[in-house]
Each structure stands twice: as C-alpha cells, then as structure tokens.
Length: 188
Ligand SMILES: *[C@@H]1O[C@H](CO)[C@@H](O)[C@H](O)[C@H]1NC(C)=O
Ligand SMILES: *[C@@H]1O[C@H](CO)[C@@H](O)[C@H](O)[C@H]1NC(C)=O
Ligand SMILES: *[C@@H]1O[C@H](CO)[C@@H](O)[C@H](O)[C@H]1NC(C)=O
Image 1 (cartoon, rainbow, N blue to C red):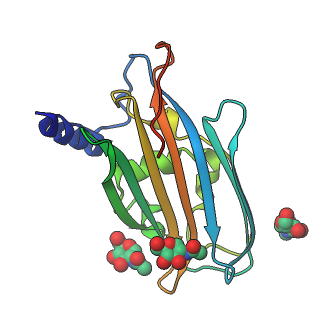
Image 2: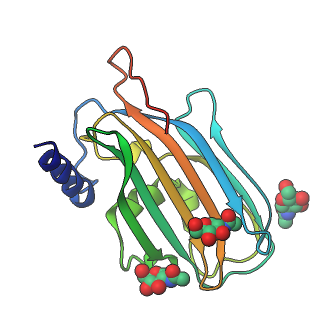
Image 3: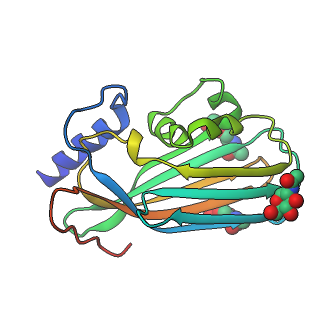
C-alpha cells in the first residue's frame, strides 16, 4: 500500500500542472544546507548561501572567466522512502539548457526550479558569456505543487558542458505545514 501511495505521489509530482494552484494552505520550505563546488577552470569565485532568517530562499553568486557556448543542467531530487526513510532518487533529469531556454524539451520539475530564479532566469541561456552572475533570493517554494507532503528532501543540481562539470550544487531542506506545531526533520 505504501508503495502504491508512493507511486501515485511520483506520478503527480511529475505530471502536476503548476498553473493549477490550489487554495489549500501551502507548505513552507526551509533549507538546511546549500553547498556549491566550482570547477576552477571556468569559475574564479562563488558564494552560495541560505538567506536568513527565514531560510526559505537561497542566493548564488558566480564569476565565470570563460565563455560557455553550450551547457546542460542536471537535476536530481531525493526523498525518504517509507518505511526506512532512506533517501531515494525520485527524479533524475539532464536537460540541454540551450534547448530548454527556447521552451523545447522541457521538464515540469525543472521548470519549477527555473521559475524560482525569477527575472534572473533569463541569464540561464546560451551562449553564457564570462562575467559576474548573481541569482538573489531563488524561490523554489512558491512554485511547488500544493499537494506535496511534509518531507525532507535533497536536491543536486549540476551545470556541465560536454567537456566538464562546471558547477555542482547540493541542497537539503524540508517542507512543513506552518499551522502545525512542530515538524521534526530527519537529518539528511
Ligand atoms: C561535480 O559532480 C560530478 C559528478 O558527480 C563530478 O564528476 C565532478 O568532479 C564534480 N565537479 C566539481 C567541481 O566538484
Ligand atoms: C566580479 O566580481 C568579482 C568578485 O566579487 C570582482 O572582483 C570583479 O570586479 C567583478 N567584475 C565585474 C565585471 O563586475
Ligand atoms: C545534454 O542533454 C541532452 C538532452 O537531454 C543530452 O542528449 C546530452 O547528452 C546532454 N549532454 C551532456 C554533456 O550531458
């Protein structure tokens, strides 16, 4: 039964149309960790942090000293699988950012993430010239489907060219109902 619920949830997660926003009380998102690793052949400096005090937004700042003509983004989502609560990969996509930014070969969950960049999402296109990039207050929570359960999760999002990984990010956080008293996140 748990298995069925899980499969159903996955199907919803992947197929949910984010335009159909529910009037239900939305869960809040709180980030726990945000780590970035930059390839020093492309990036001379970076800064990734969770925006205090609410910890619902994240900011990334990057200095690219190499022009990139074409790149991909990979996105992995891990959630605990009952009953063991061990993290399991539930989404694993690799998109060509050049095609994606033209609206081709989209992936719904990736679209949610990209929307979270707000106006700065326009910087995620090809070619990607050298320079300073700041992505302040990336807001993923506002675009998440409302039916998601309270849960811990982990996201890994990497940017890569055909030659190398350029920038790797890893995030952990949890979704909780602000009306409930306490949600005790599991350490991920
Ligand atoms: C990014 O992740 C990939 C795949 O896990 C790994 O091969 C690569 O070395 C990482 N790059 C950096 C800069 O950490
Ligand atoms: C980019 O950021 C770096 C580090 O903050 C700074 O030293 C450099 O002057 C900036 N370059 C531009 C073009 O703004
Ligand atoms: C980039 O994404 C496209 C579409 O998913 C895929 O065909 C291609 O192999 C990917 N390239 C890299 C370097 O991962």
